[in-house]
Length: 405
Image 1 (cartoon, rainbow, N blue to C red):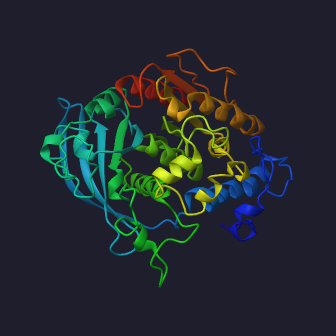
Image 2 (image 1 turned 180 degrees about the horizontal axis):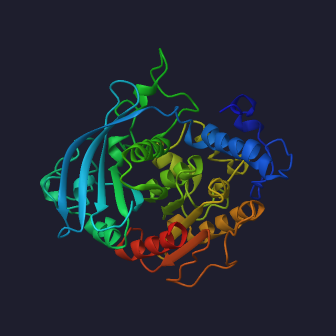
């Protein structure tokens, strides 16, 4: 944030038709040491992404948890779960409902997947004790009636989250419903989620560089990790983060800002996440800002017709995760998310990993269908469409085994 005062307006940024070099400062100076990366370029890039695209996150706040339900006999006794309401932020901030599923038979404290879900914690398990979400609800979710969650939706996303498989592989799962943090409405005026509770005195609407919905969902991830560190029932030194589609965008952004996230898996995140903003294959910056104006800050649309003025591209967001592990996973039929462009983003982030003395992307060409590149910068593409499935989770778990175990 200290860099923000020095950032020029969009119209004064230079046009860069090619990808900006993540190892060159905004003023053109070259990064030559690891110390310069950590103390200058990394914080500059973090601020650039917030200033021009996602919006600035507020400072971290304390987190308090209230137990709302629990069960010690899940999956035939293999696991336990507990549901908690996480209270954070200024007074009145809506609580975040967290579902934490932990193996019963694991020796020692298990590693954990943190996941942002689309349809409520009650869709992850069939257990009737899991509380229904009472936040704004997606009309396309199972068991939805007039955009209200109902018991009909219980277990409606078993094949999306595959909790039993995760338990069987020795991991815990901590998941929360994204609508608890901010409603995903195209008409969102930022008055019915977390945003108004963080307004400054006298403020009635977001400023040009204030956080949008993607940044808010990432902020929710950070507060969940704060709780998990206090709870100490999972190993937060071995923590992976997963999100699909728009929640994949939030996943990569959260990982770029928080080094506690050791494995970052933005699944099919596309434009505004893992795909390049330049070159316009699939969804474009202008299209995403028009269709989903609430996802980003009010400065990002200024690049709609001039994406070449962006002082970064999404390879820089992946580079901010270095030297931690990042997996870009895709589907063949999901060309809207530009799978080829995503692979090129990993190639462009690779020099930062090498600069820091670790391996990056081990292969220079996109792998064949169904083959996982499991290097520190990883890639996977399967047949099929835009979705998160059991097949994807097998790959996520294999990648996590490689980098957490």
